[in-house]
Amino acid sequence: MARMYFDEDADLSCLENRVVGYVGFGNQGRSQALNMRDSGVKVIVGTPPDASADQAREDGFQVHTVAEVVQKSDVVMMLVPDEIMPVLYNQHIEPHLRNGMVLSFASGYNVTHKFITPPKGVDVVMVAPRMIGKGVRDTFVRGDGFPSLIAVEQDASGLALQRTLAIAKGIGSTRVGVVMSSFAEETTIDLFSEHLGEIYSLRLSYEVLTEAGCSPEAVLLEIYASGESSEIYAAARDLGLWGQVPLHSRTSQYGQQITSQLFADAEARRDQLRKIVRHIRSGEFAREWQEEQMRGMPELIAKTNENLRHPMQQAENRLYRLLKRRDYDLTSASWLQGPKVEE
Image (cartoon, rainbow, N blue to C red):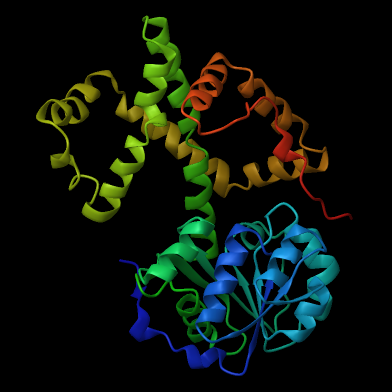
């Protein structure tokens, strides 16, 4: 059984008189930096001169270049996207690392696949929230907190675990509890959940039900657009997966647990899931994704645009306008043309 740690196991004095530098100030970085500062820790921010820098200054943080933040910090929090992190690390972070520093990641991806290999003299740790950025801040403000996976990849100081727990406490995660993991395990679990193909399963359900004569609007509301699934997952979070079953009608309980198995090939699905794990752990996915990035992400952009031309997306655009959720249509993968770090 994995070891868990809570508030009483963590000591914020490990960060006393130390500077925590956040590299990246997006959804996750901003929330963590605000939480850490509210916990009484000195925080500075390193980010390009863009909207994120403006937001950091508006929030009252000292903003520097990434290189300057590393030079001024004792703990460096790596909170930029996986795809730009290696180049940023090689150019602006590694040259300024000093023995005794802490290099903390929110994902095990780049270290696990050796796109980043930190020097021997620094602690290499991970605090990986199992929560979106907004939730990291909202739960902290409410006093609830959120769970995280933690890991120590390299203990140069002999104090890496204590420092990891202090970081977790500073952002509010030990209030709920953090689970001891590893960089490799976090990478496997995180990628696995992304490779299940859930969005394609939902779309296939849409296709079958509309083929059977059901209206697109009714189908979309049933499979995700009503928000009922969010409430079900929230109930599972609080009560457990089977603990939330009594919240459903008896008809629903029978359908979910008995009828659903009539049409499922459990062993075939198990084999598919095992293939996903092998694809991740072999490094094959990481190689494929790195090659795709080097080409400028043509396959990802093309596939996203293809998906946005699907009849289900057109129906969603109409429904969401009627529901006043969006005043625009999703028609192209414009968000994939994000900032890049030049080689």
